[in-house]
Length: 331
Image (cartoon, rainbow, N blue to C red):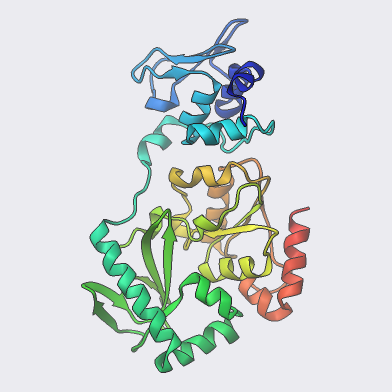
């Protein structure tokens, strides 16, 4: 059982807040002052922090003890905050955040219930097609050209919408491109469906109406206490999860354009002892790596020994070498 009183007695609130916000504007033997990030303070330094409590004397008026601070700043429940404060290993999730960053990025939300119901039907229909005669060619592509096992394909809910690579179909009232479907599921909702076309200059499209940009692919698979690998593409994430079972949690941003991970998902990173980043080897991927690196001091950008990405490395070397590479990257 968590001893709440012991947490409050052992943790210096001033040290905890300084760990999150950096050096205070003013500090003496009794208290420290900061701009309050909880209401995006721009003028003044209304947040006053003492050893055993904190209080904003400005617009938001919030305050409390160390547990309350950890809840507010990291978007955690009371139970989650107590668990990590009692662990003795306080995470340094983020660099100090500028108020403008908070103001510009509210917590993301999935599409409305009506869209989700239609999208679920699209995803299930596509899964059924992938398992049938029309899906044999797509299934062969996933196994032979992507290296995915049957278990990975099923677990990811991959599907197939047959048709010419330039064609779009109306299914359940949604505009759906033809190709291999990749549903984005998280927090009990479907946020979007990505589609990998068989050809064309732009291979990846999305089913209309989704909010993939606000989501994190495989977010629900992130296990507390395990290192995390962040990839750009979904197939890289699936291959890494396939080869790194028990070693690492995996998630993908889906595109370098989604490099600014929404704060909704920040609690997923709190318990990770390290975060590895492997984006694509291009200018956009480099920019995404730099942006994501600001999430935590535990972030490390890594490269694959062979090929242009994790998927190609897997196809060239096999599962065991990829597993060894993951282990070595974690050292």
